[in-house]
Amino acid sequence: GMVLTHLKVQPGECIIVKGLVPPDAKSFALNMGRVNSDLALHFNPRFESHGDARTIICNSLQCGEWGQEQREPEFPFQRGQDAKICISFDAQELMVGLPGDQQLKFPNRLGLEAIEFFSVEGDFRVK
Ligand SMILES: CCCO[C@@H]1O[C@H](CO)[C@@H](O[C@@H]2O[C@H](CO)[C@H](O)[C@H](OCc3cn(Cc4cccc(C#CCN)c4)nn3)[C@H]2O)[C@H](O)[C@H]1NC(C)=O
Image (tube, rainbow, N blue to C red):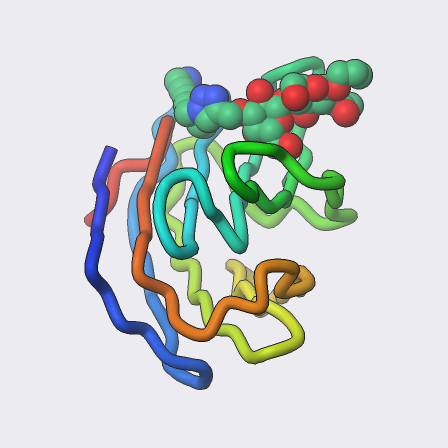
């Protein structure tokens, strides 16, 4: 999928991603952090993957090691529908704005001061 590097997204700024979730989607991920192996947030909605159904899994990756997963109560995505996702952060947490004005928060475990890396993986067609 799409990979962006050498970004300088600061606290208070936001990344807005719009795209289509294909009708046969199983899973997609938005990754953000310093580099691919140091992610402040791996945001992974699973329609049907790894034994999960309609569950958003959030995690961090530090030096290639996964942290403790956070499983979200809401799943505001539908196969075959467009989705808009807005990401911002501060010293304490990353905030993800979701469809239907839902929002989730994830601790800024890495103490990230700027988002330099952003990638989209799996079943999400960026528009
Ligand atoms: C119960 C004991 C065992 O527990 C399980 O242990 C697994 C391994 O650790 C965890 O799974 C890992 O979870 C991690 C977050 O924590 C990560 O998502 C990681 O995936 C990295 C990864 C990213 N990509 C690229 C990509 C991304 C999204 C879409 C696609 C596609 C497509 C075309 N349909 C491709 N490929 N692999 C996943 O493997 C499970 O959650 C966890 N389950 C529970 C309940 O605890």
